[in-house]
Image (cartoon, rainbow over all chains, first blue to last red; front, side, top):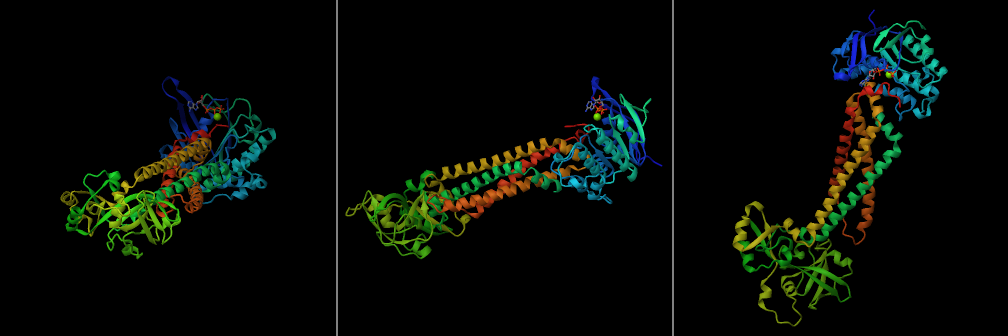
Length: 227
Length: 376
Ligand SMILES: Nc1ncnc2c1ncn2[C@@H]1O[C@H](COP(=O)(O)OP(=O)(O)OP(=O)(O)O)[C@@H](O)[C@H]1O
Ligand SMILES: [Mg+2]
């Protein structure tokens, strides 16, 4: 079976001349449908860079990125936008919700970007992440954990093939962190979404199917710790 | 539209503030437009209503004082009457006088001397009472000052007397002064300052201000050759407005103020949307990362600016019209006319939208990458 997301020999450099930073150093990664992969590593290791490349936000300096059969290297800017819209979901640190929208509208929003064959029902999805009682609240009336739940629902409403999650628990306490990652694991498994989650939080790794460590732009299996 | 309308509602305080500025500008634009039209009417409505294509003035007369300086005579009239394409050439006299009535009303008048029975005669044009020597027909606006039919107007300082025989239905003014139509002979005496009982030299009855011309086809007349032959300088009716005292300066000033207002509204709206777009940078980056196209985002922001502009300009124009109606009822030179207000509205909207569009284009420069990692 083909991986939902595959990176092959991907490098990414920032800057030019003498100031070149190698953010990704020959990274290869395959994530299957329904799999939740955690990426840990020190600050500046290249974790966000990995998400940017996998999420069609930045073209890699070399190497290939594939979503299923689709090679991102051959896509135009406009096609990349469309790929992000239809096949990729992002969950951002601290939610990054739109201040003007209620929880329910946050989830409806991605569906207004284009037409979708089989989107999930926003109201039911809101209930699934346990937020139906706050459907009419705006982000400033929600707690950090609640914002993340809405953010996760927003990323999933278009039924993306790949879900990319950047430090979802950075602003949350222990219990909320457990709940949010458990929700991510459940959604990934139940709906077959290939999920990559960057985290600093080692307490949540037991929810994940696989844990990889990133150091200095290189990706590898962690030495001792496991889920 | 989904996002645009919800953001309008969410940030309604901010948008209302901006809208209030646009509405105030719209009010000013309406008031200025009313003032322009009012002043123009006050300055030249007497000329505007004349069934005249051109006036032939004394040769090389200065254009901004043509009516007060020009003197022409029978020769010029005869020459113009013979020109190809000219279907009517009659004498026209125009002079400003101070007067009071026997009822004690002080009034300034623009005396328009006309040949009775000619195409300038209000009796021919409006079916008003015919004026005989020593009589005058006055503008509605003079009646508003308290003059009635049957009153005697006493010219200053000559003490010559004119009897008011009729009042016209419309505004006939020239140089902010009410027009009185009177027979050419009476006009000539008034202009010369003839006192009752004076012996009048013949010369007085040979001079008038200009030859009023009617043509069937402007281009059929060889204007230059005719001017040469008649020893005159002809101005079209519109050109002659510039000879109404203060007309050009007033209109130019008001137009300049209006253009400043359009520019200010475009700038203010541009600045508002620039700040708004900069504030929304992170949000826009998130939307782009989620796959919103540039077109989607631009359309969304433009919808916001259109709603803002149309609603606030609409409210402003409504208030402006209400205020204008109140001002119209006073003695201020003010007139609301649909066409200039429509033009002003369109300009306000188009230039405002232009300002907003330039600001909103900034969206295209937001990198979706900024959505990642950035916590605020
Ligand atoms: N736009 C950029 N220009 C130059 N260098 C950059 C840029 N973005 C990232 N880098 C560099 O690339 C490297 C990887 O950055 P990245 O943001 O991927 O790290 P990270 O693992 O996500 O770190 P953190 O845990 O702090 O979020 C860092 O050394 C960073 O300084
Ligand atoms: Mg990072």
